[in-house]
Image 1 (cartoon, rainbow, N blue to C red):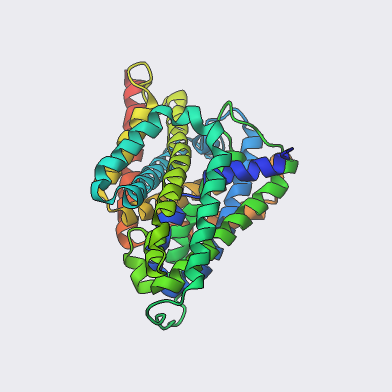
Image 2 (cartoon, rainbow, N blue to C red):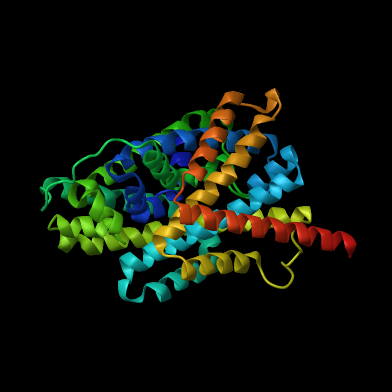
Length: 397
């Protein structure tokens, strides 16, 4: 069977996308948005589409740059780049912790902490070597499991009547969109590939980006509607493993091992991308001189895992996911801001796309739950300060 470049791009990005947002994201989103978290998913998809266009344009302008940090550095200067890098690292740490927490909740609920830490260490050690081989298999397995969950949940009426739907609240919809935005960010797997990864031309991305975002939107809406149907927003907001709990509520306890397999595959596939993104930002910081060259003493994967493990041990899974979403939204605010000032000849999409992405990213970040917003801002302030001090010490030394 011949695989077209467009299909290959979509599958690669899906393998980096169908993870924490699917496994645990619906619970904190339901806690914030209630029954209106499905419209919130659509708003998150629009934001992701704008951000994907911005990163694709910047990669075309700076094909050898080490990711978003380098884009921001080239376009806006060193201090915005340090803030953006800190936000990205906070976001990656939160999402990695959420993925590890989801893995433990689904696969080893009685040993969640040990299982999550083990996943972080193993994935950091061997994940980069598996990235090119697991995408297709991961997507096929995860999508098949999600189809089973959706069919079972809709085939059985819920045991209790659905919660009454209250009036739509703007802050609730924005907060839910802020959380679910993180479920779309695997698009960077193809819009801004790492060095050595396959690069897709603009004519391919013009089709594959909207197809990818649309596919993720359909999956999230279907799964979200299914778990809402069975659990209702109140029970969903409290669930540590929504897919499993929805199956049990739908009298599908025999299929729980199937969901466990899907959760394991999704966790590994997405965690490879999340830790790889953190490492790429650290590489950019080292290359620019904002971070001391630690690679001679220990690999940068150690830094990535240490940040993720700290978030995993310190934060509950839902809060870690919210911090990951908030940090990621702040980071894309800077990425869209830098995309706005690209020269016209470096653009494939109009500047207004980056403008819309900038506005939406900032709005979503500021709409995150208060505890996640405070934690994210504190992490960004500390990270930016440490990077600035490291740079000053290097200049003085």
